Amino acid sequence: MSNVSFSNVTAKYGKNTIFSNLSLEVKKGEIMCLVGPSGCGKTTLVRCLLGLHRPETGRIAIGDTVLFDAEKRINVPVEKRKIGIVFQDYAVWPHMTVLENVMYPLKKRKYKKEMIKDRAMHALEQVHMTKYESHLPSQLSGGQQQRVAIARALVTGAEVVVMDEPITNLDAKLREEMLLEIRMIQNNLGATILYITHDQQSALELCDRLAVMQLDGKICQVGTDEEIITNPVNRFTFEFIGNSNAIPMVVYENKPCFELETNIPAEGVDIGNENVDGKDMLVRLNDVVFDNSSPIKAEVTSRIFLGSEYNYFLNLYGKEIRLQQSMLDAKNNGIANVGEMVGVKFINPHFYNKLMNKEGK
Image: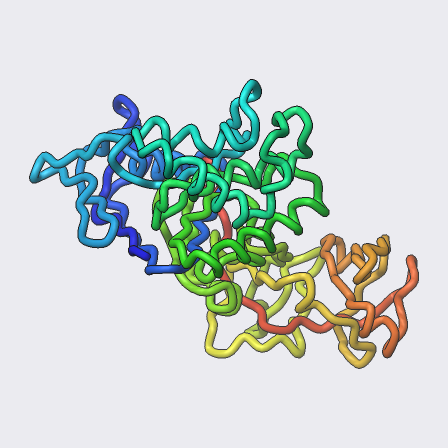
């Protein structure tokens, strides 16, 4: 197992800076999920690690092996970096059998013939695909093709594996199965995995830690899923990881109020020592709860059953907000009906400056 470190890495395409002075460390044997919206620079960071894109500045290393150092003019060739890679589109050769696909990287690296098949079969065994060794990719399901791609990434004994959106093209049930498979494979091999995705739900299910990347290419927070959800460092992290409501606030007659159709006193909302004037209150959907004793009232405009929970849309004094109610809560306290006026309570609110439009307003 080896750690992966990026130190003050700057990457550009022409005059366009993708990210600047980026630093990140992936610990030995962990699954680090790099999450962020499309276009923020996640794939560019992967290309820098693999040697497919040359950074302007900085240093990239796996363990004690330096792959790139701008000052020392070190730039290890792609084929010598010994990093496994699993792409979004699998990239398995359609004219090769499963076994031939997995053997291919070993042949390219000129391994001894007597070793190649044994190592390939061992890699297939890791992903439970040995009985398909003679199949062509066209005879496999999407999930099976993805397993072949993972086996091919592991076959050279790479201690670091990069997975770039590896389950995006799979259906929901298969995505769930593949996340479990990836975790199982990682537990068996102890490999260090850098998992790239814009799907925060998959990241939360799979990762040991997350690194959240903003649209400007900055990594704004690194931590466990619990740390990032409970203590987001900024508004972007709060809104990107999980769904939330944003309600404008104002101080009116020395009282914190919701700035809605009229200034509604935010009674029962724990604002701590926060100066909420001109800010938005952000609260997650499952932190909005029904409470008939609450003076804050809303009308139920829609209710959707999602299998394990109910999803409600509420009209809060002209502002649409959402609420999620677990099946256990619904069983114990009942469900709310469309058209019903209900009391709502806000738990664990966070307060952030309002977002500005292009004109700065």
